Image 1: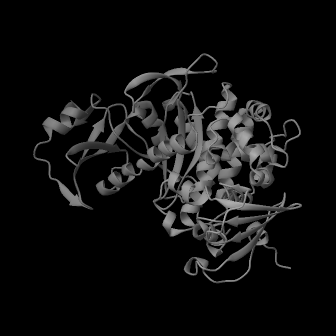
Image 2: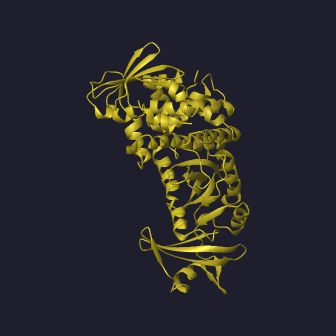
Image 3: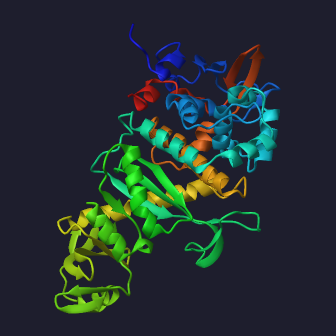
Length: 457
């Protein structure tokens, strides 16, 4: 007998028509979780009953969770239950906490108690605040790194998410502010967005992109960025199962020893130079700022893709030959350098402009996924929290390729349209009937071949 995938096994359909084109009709699908059976009846704006949920779309997240076999990976990572509650349920709760608008573990516990649907979804008897806090604090770095490895490796099993050798690695840092003295391993750091020094944590996140897909791969916290970046890259190669040899980072990583180490590893890098760093142009040693603004006056500019740019070669002391690209972008001059002298200037510009994906991810993680809402002051718990936020980002990002209306949408928009869906709840023993009363179009789309196609191995 032909073995079916978890997605094909768990999702069953009654009918083949596109319900979004016939909104006046009802549609029923069955979704069988390992913990309970849910019948989903999608209806258009019927009168609400007394029991309802505002988060019916979490069924979609739970479906993606099971398709990625995260329960199995949690067990493989050695994460254990706490106070009788399964580690799988506690991890799921930690990931979806911001999706149900709970800014703390206490708020999440109260929502689980008061929402019959959330209680049955993954949790059985809802865990209390103390259980959540003890669970997060009990996690160690080896368990988190192991789960991180397993999740990224699982993504590589899906052809639409598999990393390609000609893709790019992107690395950047973000600041998480803390107040008070009950936090371990805090440090003083510069927050560029506020232009001041703050106290807190500074996770360095390495992500993968090829222009079509983007997701975080690995991260470190509170370590010196230039010293730890090569080891983070090697870790990403292990996770991705392929040696992605191009990386983009901003001028904050500028370091000649780092450049030499990356070059020795066979890595092509694109970055911004420091203005006061010196470079040889011909026989003249100049700062990058002087070279760009004063020395090069008759440089020939080219135009492509609406960009106006110039390029030339120079010699970086203690490193070697580099290519310099000067971009005139919206009345601003941007200077870029790369160790690949043969890379076309427009490719250098394209590569550097990919960095906006990382900046967007940080902003959305802070605004919509609770990155700044630290549940504990213990350092290992904070590392776990950062990973749970990044895992939540991956799960929500999966749906960008399910429905074209989500492509290019922000995480906040997808959460509003897809996750925070109001539904009536009808209980019958272990069975729950979820009657969708709004957002039915997008919810229906998750139970079509598009989700299967997205998660095809």
